[in-house]
Length: 297
Image (cartoon, rainbow, N blue to C red; front, side, top):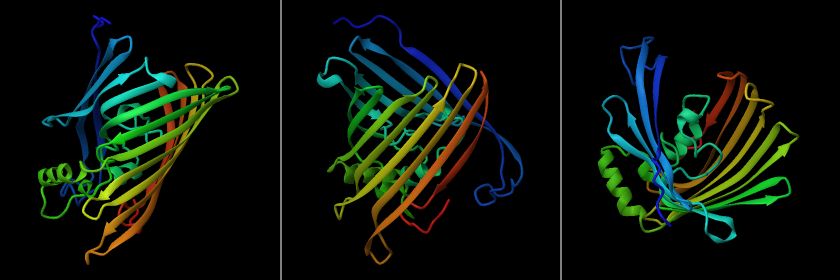
């Protein structure tokens, strides 16, 4: 098949934030000051390579002097596979839960929920891997099935900075210790209409990843998500998103004893669109620590 001659879709999305804070610990001497920050510029190039495949690339520039970071770069085979399967390969945001596949500018709030920051880091769950997915019609319901084989799973100890160890050393250690065993993740979801203008989506996701390579111990994470949307027209909508994450992982204490830590987090977002370009909402956010269930944020 000949390659398409059309240019890819290219977009530039900037994130500029005006804020006030009272964080003396990280910004001493600036208590109560109003600050204007250029947070991020996202550059996206997406398009079809041929009728069967497309490529998506997302680059991020953090701050005015930040380096260019590859946020996502992957190839998707959309057609031609048996059982209505689609294949994705590259670096991407796995569909672990409802929110993780979205970029920050797609949210009606600013920060990534605390439970994803705590369990996976500030950028959320991003990994290199291969994904097989399929959408199966069951009556009026669309049943989604998805499975991933991933390089790290995003939950190894290298995601938490150790004293006296530079970020470069941690990244090198991650390359040394996580290539031996792949992580695996799966998701089952159902999307169904409730009447003519209301839609419900619910999903269950699971992740198993190597947490401590030396001891060959694994972390297990379970995510439950729920989304309800009422949209009678293009000018009004009401959306409720609720997500719960359960974390179980081995943690090495100061005396080198390994204990099993269990913690959880959740968030809920309610958004009401009352004009085409205006909306208002509420947000609830809570999490325990990834490696200490007594820590709260």
